[in-house]
Image (cartoon, rainbow, N blue to C red; front, side, top):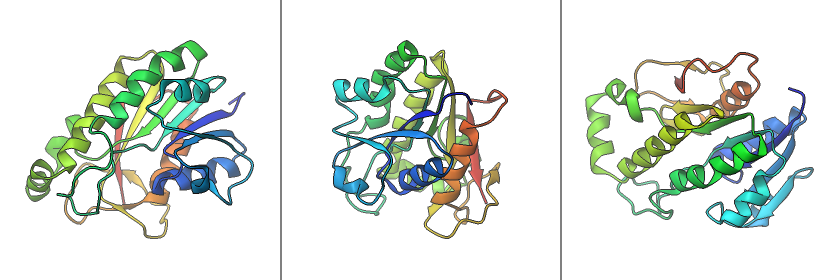
Length: 218
């Protein structure tokens, strides 16, 4: 990787903070867009742009000069309850990808890696029946629709991209045993740190992505 200018979207989130830490350790020139700079307190050596990723001017400023993009964006709920209302627009990631892709293509971004979710798109048939019922009847369905629409936009782009689809996210310690998995059950899980590491490692792969998405777990 000759140039290492990296834009991180969703840098203040639970996966995003791990992505920031890992990419800092690997010597990237990092730009992050956050709603409040205070969310990045204690993190030095990165460029922080305060504003909304839905603001086209902010997004354009952030993308200028970047070689790579890592997105940890996802719809937020008002509480962890799957049936809780949303605190983000229902098309958050779709809107950012839709607005950002032309800017990325114009600026010569080489590769983009985004977080998605196990069960999105063609991985739906790998979700167990009970989980399907929870997803369909809760606010999670809106998150899945948003991710699916984002993935479709990425697949149509000229930029090489990968959607990482983790199974159930937990805040446990990293096991460094993340791998491609075929099924998503009630007991499936992976730590957010391991998801972040997978995304950063994917960004640095020498070979081209052979698939548009990867479902990962322990």
